[in-house]
Image 1 (tube, one colour):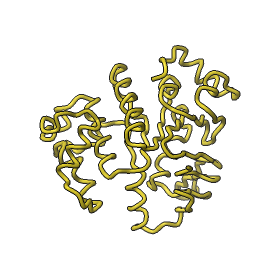
Image 2 (tube, one colour; image 1 turned 90 degrees about the horizontal axis):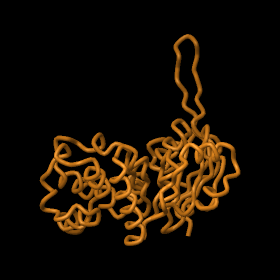
Image 3 (tube, one colour; image 1 turned 60 degrees about the vertical axis):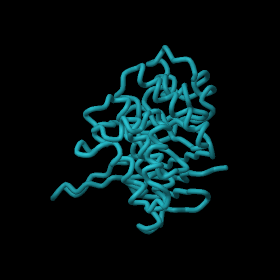
Length: 262
């Protein structure tokens, strides 16, 4: 079942330049993507390709200039603020830098507890905090709950942010370059965790990266982005083994030693 899709989504940023008028930057141009239930979809491309802009649009940090955003078949581009808050519980995002994403003044329990409080969670909040910390292998929870971000490793901080995103039981997780700032061995651990979460929770995941090596590890399908457009898409194994677009071939040639698939 298709959960989330874009139809002809475009995003143009306009900047005033005083007496010289304005400049227009086309960040996305007629982009069509989709993700189905229990699927991991990759968005791969170099810096400036538009993939992070698309991620922010998918969680309503940006509004599209044109096109439609469909969630469970409904066009949500005209949603009001209350509807957007509800939608954001269903579609959660994990950002690239786990340290910058966490408030250094608060401990782990506070970070995981906060979305539960703001969403009006009706269950036992402390039990849910413990549950999601165990999901992301921060166990025993009591050991980690009172720690602050500076007391954690990079991989542990990313797990905390994953726990925070999972706390409200979203249907879709958008992971924007979640392993790019981690050591290679930790990257594998986080990618294995992402695969495990899909299997155990039935969650759908959009995995965004510039690294063809990692997109080949965990995704079912992949969209290749370049200059704000999707230039190639399909089954991940097919795209990696037989790319049809020049830009896809260049990405693969720049990463000649792919890992074995998880």
